[in-house]
Image 1: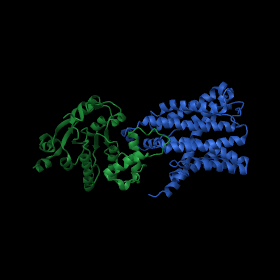
Image 2: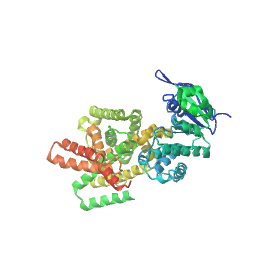
Image 3: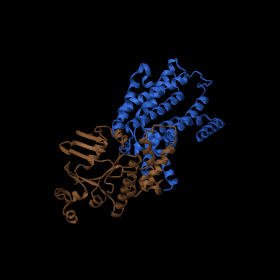
Image 4: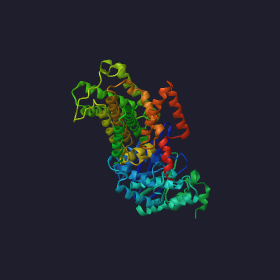
Amino acid sequence: MTAHLAIADLVKHFGGVVATDHVTLDFPPGSLTAVIGPNGAGKSTLFNLITGRIRPDGGQVLLDGADIAGLAETAIVARGIGRAFQIASLFPSFTVAESLAAAILAHRRQTHRMLTRFPLAAARGRADEVMHLVGLDAHADRLAQHLSHGDQKLLDIALALALDPGVLLLDEPTAGMGRDERWQIIETVHRLWSARRMTMIFIEHDMDIVFKIAQSVRVLKYGRVLAEGTPAEIRDNDEVIAAYLGARYAKAAP
Amino acid sequence: MLALLACVLTLLIASALGSKPLIDTLMRLAIFGLYAVSLNILVGYTGLVSFGHAMFFGFGAYAFGLLMQTGVTSLPAAALASLALSAALALIVGALCIRLADIYFSFLTLAFQMLLHAVILSWVSLTGGDQGLQGGIPRPRFLGINLADPWQVFVVTTVVFFASLLAIRTILQSPFGYALRMVRDNAPRAAALGLPVQRYKLAAFVIAGLFGALAGILMALYVSGAYPNFAFWTLSGEGMFMIMLGGIGVFLGPVLGAAIFLLLNDTVTRFTEYNGMVMGVVLLVVVLGLRQGLLDVVMARLRPR
């Protein structure tokens, strides 16, 4: 199967630091992949390079075979790569419903309209749908800034989801959450993936979550790919254990 | 509907009372109210703090006055041409300014405004320098309207004021207006959702410049002239003052701010020449005491959580 998203020989320097060092990775269509690695491994940088927030110094990002490296962020979103952030990135003064309608209108290039009233009926319908998908229906009219931390993370994911992306990148969907909340959000994420079968890539530090839901795992360290494989393979990989997992997971392995 | 009602009501009350000072006050309120609302498109809705908005007020006034003095155009044609020129100016200045972030944006707008002010002062043969436009602005009749008559100037100004407010309100409540709010709230996130942020900033800058220039044209009609202080930084500052006083987050906040500003200014100057000090204290009290504009406070009270 050809990859939905493929990264080939990608390089990014920040001054003298090599944040992404000739990274080559494949993500098959409809796959659910976890990207793990110690802090500073270049995980978020990788997301920034894929989404066009920062430009790579070399290499390719192939979406369905077409090179999108170096395109503007807005052009890349338009091609169907959505993204949620490590720290929920929202529009504080918008209600949940308004946030989603605005995201949909921006994606459909309808925000230049000056004479109709916001939100257009069509966008409202889709906004309701997405709210229902992530389970934010009850909070439709609450301001984003008044939501709980967990709901803010959900809204951030919902914003990306509203664009109906083929590839969804989630940067630590469970960051800063308590244990119960964490599993709730990860169940939502997993449910979205099973229902929609989009290509989903998430960065995660909680190994229990990674090993529970990921189909495959990519391990980064110092900007390089240290290992890739199924959760079971990663758990048994001596290099990964030494660099990141520690002994706990090695012993816990069946 | 509401705008039409308010417009008719204003005209009726003014005509019933027919007092000259009242009409003068309402004229100035309409002009500065529109000016402050146009600035708030940038400051309140797009999050672009322009320190140079008076540039468009002054440019509109001078362009209109100079075009009328040539005598070749009719009054509406001159007004439209001035607006088109102001929009072109806003497009150029805006394209340069929005490339910079935050305080650098603010200072670049200020720099362009001071440049325009300097040009007005030094190009004496065209602008009359520090004396202002010489010889008044001719107002030939058009469509049966005679703008040499102060009452008719008042009616036109009032109608233009309410029509402009309605137009700005419509724009701000449209998908476009919400795109501006997205830019204000979180520009990087808006970009990640596919919004071409820079283009929207520029559009907001041009629209704000356009209505700022319209206020300037009304001012030129009202005083039958144009003066360098129309494009001076103090007027930019007063625009900010009006917005902060009345409320940044409520559509009509800047109009209330303009009303308070004008009333304060008129009353205080009657008693003391240190009006700047009094205004400063008032602004300090509002900013430090309420931490938002008057209408912001009222709306926050009314809105349920």
